[in-house]
Amino acid sequence: MPKKQARVYLAAEIAASLLSLCSGVAAFSPLPLVNAAPNAQTNPHYTAAISRLKQEDLQGAMGELNQAIQLDPSLADAYTLRGILHMGNRDPLKAAEDFTQVTRLQPKSAEAYINLTKSQLMLKDYRTALQSATKAKQLDPQSQDAALLVNLAQSLVDAAQ
Image (cartoon, rainbow, N blue to C red; front, top):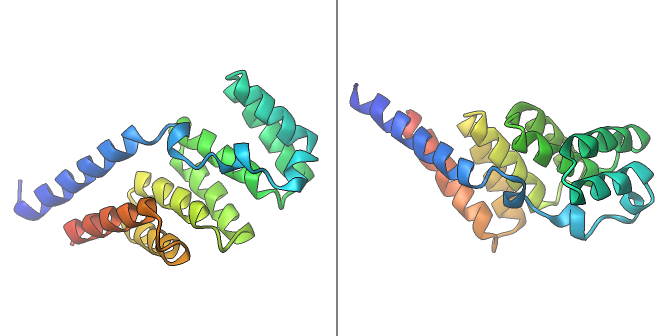
């Protein structure tokens, strides 16, 4: 195996290992569960999704989140939770779509960009992940998660060259 290919492969394997350690629901920001926006708590489907999550009914929670988003397409917390569930289901493309929507709805949220970065890394879209991680770091310079993701994405971009 040529040296460049080996570096890319090794970097990708390291990234995949790190992400597999943190790809569960716990690795993503619990903010929607804790600090839901006022409109989230008045959305009956969002409230039902939280109840279903507490009962570990992930499929039921997904259905409720879909309905919550239909009822209120501006509900960033619902997109965040649905994205987290997509990541748990190993569907980073759908997760990235949801996290992208969160960045549109909450452009000053570092957590939104951190979640988006994780999904982009799972998709092996390293350059875009680096851009998202850098944006998260700009929004929250103290974020250790953002700093780690910037370094990881940068090393993957460098290894791919």
